[in-house]
Length: 325
Image (cartoon, rainbow, N blue to C red; front, side, top):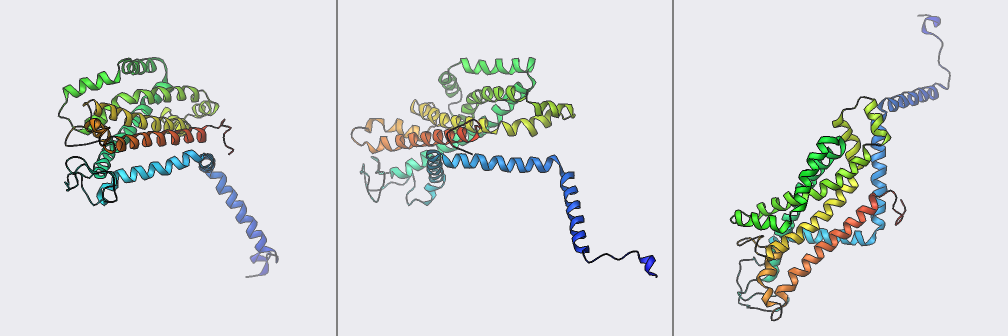
């Protein structure tokens, strides 16, 4: 083969040319990825901003650590403790000590084991309520807020119907009707009432978001309603959804306590923090540890959940001036 057939040879700078060609190909590849890459980068940047804002909220961070410890203790502490709630010891009505950190009751039951068992049930109920309420309330609020019109009117009238009836009246009727139902039914009943608060909040958020320019642009490009809701609106409504779920979680703990105290909530053989307060309320003067320990734990759970919710609200609020991004 002649020199002309091979074509002109590359100069000594050929590695530089190769690098430039590779850079051009890489740029073309990035350009072809287009919106997907930009969406991923924007999501990561937004997550970092939210995380930085939340970490600046010292009270919320401390509350989150305490809340995680409380949840871990409630869910797994009973399995690691040396006594079980049904174990009877020879220490009758003993005050708190190294052997029994929260004392014992008149039957010799270790009260720390009882409180852990009650906290586990209360936490499980609160978690079920949070998940069910978040899913149902978000779905109904999103549909009503996005579509509006007749759909919005029907869904909101159903929501108003739940709001005008006092919660305790609903639970009293359900308790008399399903007296033998377990704590799972109580959790679902709480979720069946509390979803309306999440639905109203999310509806308002979606009404505001559906008028944004990026939603109109997505419609002009032919995006379906499902894609607009799940790809554009839900990610931007994450903040209000999370904050609302934290508030509902604290409300569920208080409602369960109130119902169990009135005898309409968790019943024997199950136990909860509210039922422990109800059982030992008469011992508040003679054996105060039986009354105050579950009460303090309820207050601690509700306070930490609310403080975490405040921190998340400030972190997700782009107009917040409490901390700098």
